[in-house]
Length: 255
Image (cartoon, rainbow, N blue to C red):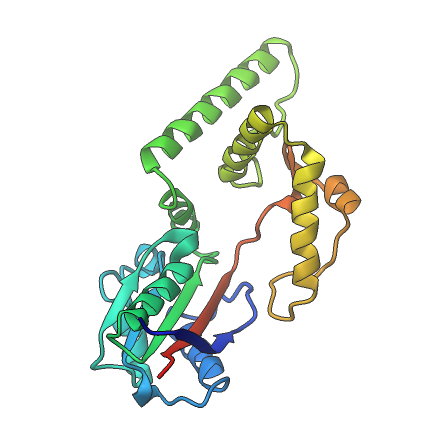
């Protein structure tokens, strides 16, 4: 059983890059990786490439890793395409680890790249979120939210009140879904809103130390709680931002 080492990593700052393609981001992160370790492209024996949404935006399915890596001179090796939502890059790393652990390869590449910010195609952005869960369940939840908003609007109209802007106006309906899951957790385990804010504050602190993080603003628990409400118990500081990014790791065997 081989020992497995991560001998190099690559990443660029996460953010909104409407001008960059998946291929461009792949090139940038690969250059960052190769600058971090004494390995050349020809030494790579296999690659695991993680991407979930390229196909939704451009129709590029099936061979995403081959399409992204071939122009960079990485070809003629096994390329495994990994699609596993938020766990995609971790799954790619796991696959590369297993390939070396099994003795099949000595040097393997794990690379994850995702382009989620597409302001010119908001329908695609919505479909990205939809595809990250059971779409039948999500559609049912959204329909229930919409029906509830219609009922509230009708009741307000009957009382002669102006229509409120609720129902996720200006925000993703997925924040309502995440908030609902948080409330279920609170009911089941007694979790408090402040405890959730502690988690967010911890993450903001870590981001403040990372020059490649999308946002690098340290926030106290009190500041997280005082931020603009989104959907109880979530404030804006508890919600993940939309963004693009890529990261890579090179693994090798002990020998």
